[in-house]
Image (cartoon, rainbow, N blue to C red; front, side, top):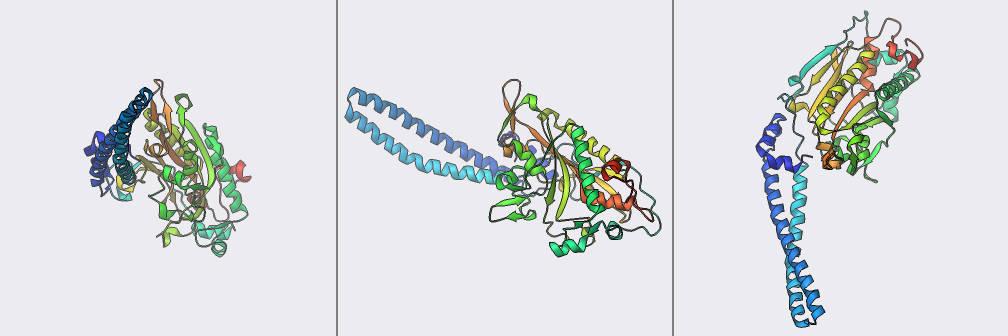
Length: 422
């Protein structure tokens, strides 16, 4: 959630930044300023009235001590009158505060200065590319055919057990999943990230804290009886570990990693783009999260991008890094880099990771703060990234490394998988 002080300081700047996102309701900025003006006026009235009540109450005590009961009774009538007038003021104040907060939460994060204008993925900027696109053998197959040929994944069985988008990994397919998860976690912990195994369901406060609510409510699986949500990413439970806490500056940065299954309804997804592992309702992902000093968050963002890039390089896959335009960024992000890997058999780029800086947008919702050297309390900045999401990585590993009678595995996975090829 945007900080009210930022909006009040320069409403025109906030509107200009929102226009980079193509956010249509910039008039909400004016509404927020007006509501805050009302709030301040009502708060002043309430404070003034309460102060009068407190002053009269002290005077009543003094009069009673002197035995001046008649004068004290007169003062009590004044207190009663003030209390009667205070009640509608406090009710109106509560209503205005509620409307102010419900309006504030509708605003997305402000794009950073480097975020390009644009409306669609076509407007994203390619920062750099790496790796080489493979020359596939004659008769090369897409991953869904390779998965069937080598008995790695059964999509039809998953459809029988649950439904479309819930594949069953079998034999060496399951082993490859496990090898990738362990490799990703080891890679992250070697870089100083602390591993967590968080719950895969969260309460409403946690989902609201990281911005999934109200923005992505329709994309999450909701356990209505208990009002819990299946997580779309480990970002949600991991970032909420420090919700409502004040950290010491010396604790920063906090670096966390976690493996979890992830669940997304992906409402509206259909056609060739969802075939095989391209888009699933349940998938495995390893996430990295950092809570950092606000002055260092963009330096850390570049470090996290380099971290994910080296991981992709170790998998010997062709990739590219994109800086997302305003119209393609997530609701909570101030800047996002997407990583895409080239799927040789499908001849298309597939997103495998997003690395984002949320600045204070999430931490303002979650009240994650720290005390600096001068004793001042500030909001930390939060960042996260996929390191990595497995489905499309597996798809590209199968397709890009296929030979006529086997699938070669990158050297980094040999010890984890226990073999050099499938």
